[in-house]
Image (cartoon, rainbow over all chains, first blue to last red; front, side, top):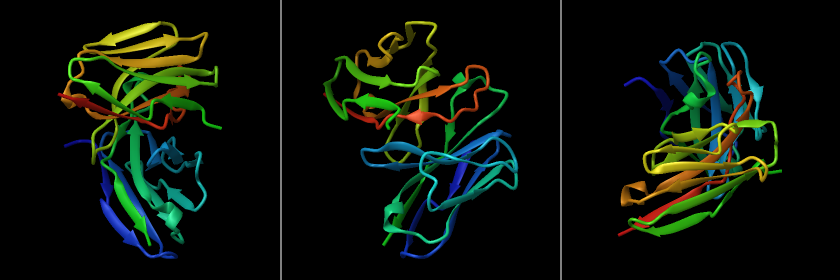
Amino acid sequence: NAGVTQTPKFRVLKTGQSMTLLCAQDMNHEYMYWYRQDPGMGLRLIHYSVGEGTTAKGEVPDGYNVSRLKKQNFLLGLESAAPSQTSVYFCASKGSDQRASAGYTFGSGTRLTVV
Amino acid sequence: QQQVKQSPQSLIVQKGGISIINCAYENTAFDYFPWYQQFPGKGPALLIAIRPDVSEKKEGRFTISFNKSAKQFSLHIMDSQPGDSATYFCAASQGRNSGNTPLVFGKGTRLSVIA
């Protein structure tokens, strides 16, 4: 099915380890976003991209890096994982030719635990 | 500073009753107000959205009421059903014609509809 695919779905990391979360969309969307979801905190924007080769910081960017080398992929990297980065990470996308009212398409999330 | 404040944090409603979730915002530049629905283990999905040029929008059992002067908007779920049990997020963004301003989300409301 067309949509947003996140890889992996689950991961356990040790403090200090690094990893990359992959987000892939097959809808030819221009805009892509990374959010983290924590209990009682809602969805908070980490980084986003308005097109291939562009990235921008969101509300909580510290400790994360991103890359958008290909239009369909948006990678989120943790260089040195910390327990505070234990969270569920959601990727979302939106087409630039859509009205804002069309909404975001979200992936099913990556549950990351840092021990 | 929380840009979108959502209440209540949790809500229990009898089957057939009305569920009401409220949100308030500070940024008067916001001009797009969607509600997202999230089931356990899934990503959020757009439920309904409104722009400030109307005071109410209805889609089936779901209605958004918007009060521009009070900077508040709310979601009403009529004839609530057990299948409506989910977490609901309000959100806001600005840029009526651009559509690429990232959404800012409230902290979420966990709704439980009991028979």
